[in-house]
Length: 363
Image 1 (cartoon, one colour):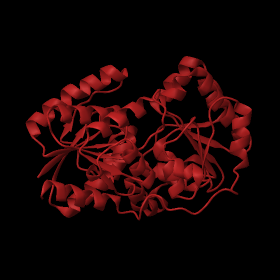
Image 2: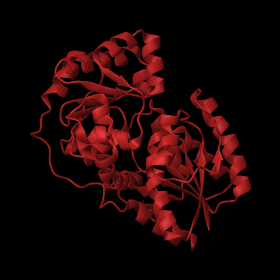
Image 3: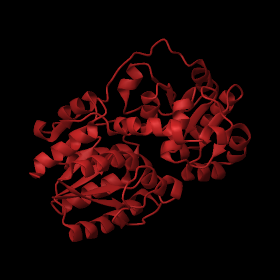
Image 4: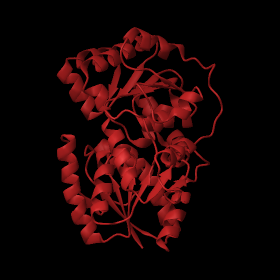
């Protein structure tokens, strides 16, 4: 039996690393890894293959950046050719990127079964491209791997058949457990940046809703600059964010107030997350990773898919707007609402996924 796994962006490399390792250990299913090239900077892609000991992708479409429609269209064309040549028994897609959408649509058009890892997540904000991507991917998928009870319940509310829904736990938790000890022993990123555990904030900004809106981006920069008056703020700078800061005239302010660094590999990123006093991010993956390592996260968005972390007090929504108010919340780090919760399983989501794929494929 053969599956094609479609990946193209940082969170997908992390998730695929955990699942690919489980597939290799199980041995019943051949995996063909396809990299769309959505993230093409070395620190945003190849470094993850090295750090997760992933085999090089058999196919790299090299699509690169572009407008959503153009980028997705190029991926569709390339993936259709790959699927026709590889003739997989199933296509596996991850998360909510344009690579996810293209992989799901290309497979659906060719009548190839689809399994979606991280099915059922919803922000309920259709202005987000990611929301459209995940809804469409769920709609055409044959197997819906839900990472949480909340996600599984959402799929039921939307009328997806029960036989398609499989609760797995979260593959990101698998990856976090795999990487934690490695990060502690191998990463030297804190030494390189002159940082101490618990002595800094970590920030990431990359979503279009923030980078493409000058007012939101300015409020994020100013709020983080206020935080930086008390604690250093480290910001690994996504290429899209650097370009947006340059366009909006905010780059000089960010450089003056914050510790801007190039995107880092996953092991170094984990070490930065583990050592942070707090995290401020608009990333779905980073806000979960912070929780895995017991670090509070301020979510720089109006809503989040990971509502269980907000309910448990670990994550706090900080909508970009009033920079002073944002900084006040982030500096307060209110711990009174935090509860001990385990919404993401026991660290064996990848094993559950592989077992279910083998069962459905008759491997």
